[in-house]
Length: 129
Image (tube, rainbow, N blue to C red; front, side, top):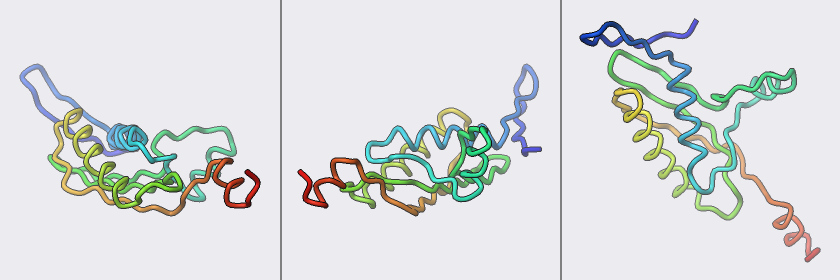
């Protein structure tokens, strides 16, 4: 079972599951221009092969009472500046998670295990165009 962050309000208790922070981070990542997708590695590929969609694949979060750390694995579109895309992802994830959850995001680590190529790029590189 996922850990839950507990907040007390004057009306009762609010609990936010780690998976919610992970999904929020994933969605904030793919909003950034230049991000093709998140990479879930072999475990993500297996779960998709058996029909389970995991919106937070490629995302790992550590959530404390007031702070969070997010690790992301991104596939970036060919031709994009990897550093610029990663910086924009870090900024967007931090802003969105903090705005939605009230957590302080202390670190967003970005790993880029691959680059995606469009069919046009492949054809141009092979001299087919």
